[in-house]
Image (cartoon, rainbow over all chains, first blue to last red):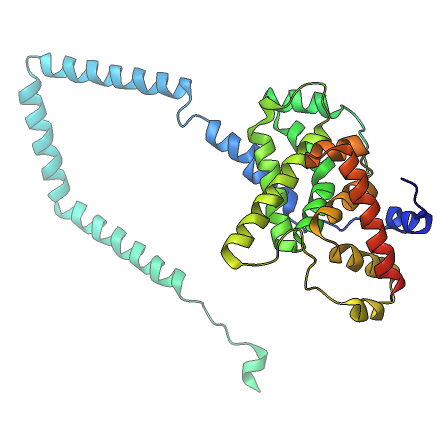
Length: 123
Length: 181
């Protein structure tokens, strides 16, 4: 199949390719390799499972040891009562109230933009 | 435009990507992004759809990397995936919007409008855009991408003789369109 398209061929070969839209590569990578990395990453790593299991086992053993202790019930009651009494003491309530008031004041202060008088405001 | 490979070749990058090295697939995307987008743009004639098709092609390629035959050309494979993604989309467009048939010339700018364009490249692009889909794709792959007949035949799943015929007719139509300006 002979042709005489030399001029057309030259023009076609010289025709530059259109630039892909910005962000296309990023979108492709997001849909492929980055997506796979997100999916394939385990929610909990093995060492995390091991640490959680060990902590739970130690906690269970401590609770069991405490409950098995003869004077546990009495000591537990005593400590609970002491804690409630300490919390209900006037001094504790005053400090608690002061803390809450300061926290509320800081919250309100943070949401209001302070306006200082500027030069433009004078004229 | 064959991808100029500096560093590992495409086959090595595919093997590395299969082994879980994400940067290897990133390099493949970098090498073929422009060519694939160009093929999609020529086939779809819509930048948004071309973008979607290009993204879809790479997504499909990534998901089926393990089916890529070692020793075969990655470019042929990815071009084939992209072309079929475009065909699927054109088919859907035809079904749902009763839009153009892929084989039919577009109701794009006519010769009078093309003639107003002084820039030769723009005129040529417009003329290519006027070609029927089968000719447009062949001319895109052959002239703009530098593909060989055999590779085009594989990408389009056509006999090589048909590819040559399409190319010849595409050139005839192009020349006719450009000389009527």
